[in-house]
Length: 110
Length: 130
Image (tube, rainbow over all chains, first blue to last red; front, side, top):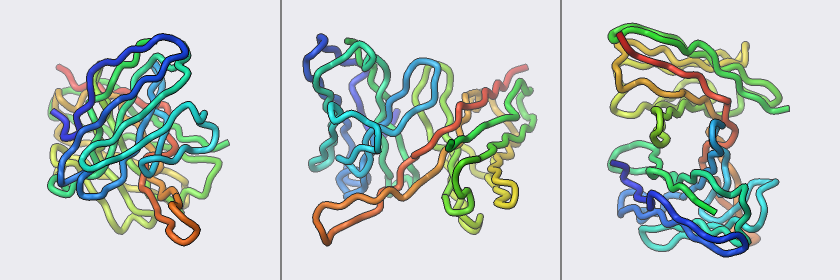
């Protein structure tokens, strides 16, 4: 059971907008630690999608955006495309555990 | 091309040992913190260990403390994970990754560094079973 809670699955039609939530607590997201998001295509390594809560690494389309408020963070994907159908993970640091932590992951179906 | 290539995975009996390696190329390895992250079959990601640029600081998830040791050889651009007293629950794909401080700014004067797992290798499978 991860300290960062994500919905197991979300879905949306092509062209639509979806959001994936990441709910933490006062010892991780609520404590001000950054939230990062990763995309993992089937059979491949994770790829950094969003860092520092809202910033995109070079090459990541601006259809992907991140936000953070209080003890939660969200990943939004606009203009859904078929290739967006995969798993997404949030990640932060937890001061109570003294550990870097991931959410359980969310499977996006387009 | 920036690249991380893991090796050393395989089948090992419970209680056995295995040493994973990660060869880095295309970037100045000695300037980066490095990490191991694992993923059990069909499960999510779990951070395992971090090591500072010069190897002077190391951090581990509680479940591997005392059993796993992370190390590096900057002269060989290589990262290692020595795994002892292996358990069935250690079965996973093990990824090495750069743990990079990525700069972001919220204004012209307020900039910060975000520690994120930036570059990932393709992973090596470790199976602990009798």
